[in-house]
Length: 78
Image 1 (tube, rainbow, N blue to C red):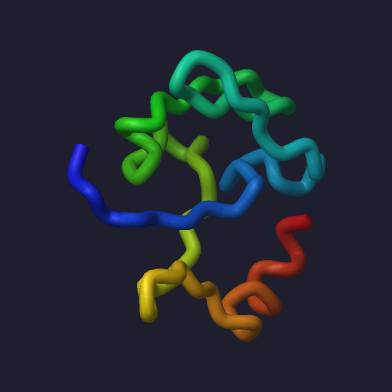
Image 2 (spheres, rainbow, N blue to C red):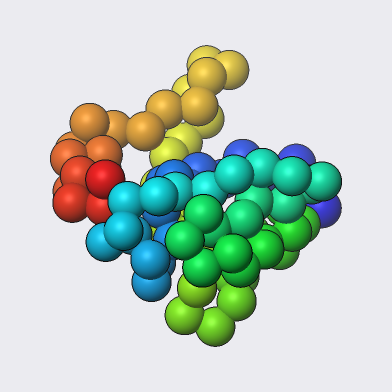
């Protein structure tokens, strides 16, 4: 795994209407609704139509930033 920083919503692309998010366990996140497990090393690709929703962010002066506009566009996922 490389050293890039990624950001994801606490929402499964298929299950977000149920508003249950993920739990973390043994280097993986698990959807609380469908119980699909995503190893941290494979988060970016997901599994079929079930995957954590990726959002864009950027590194700036040693801090990882996500714009308020990006979060506002994703508000319906929570």
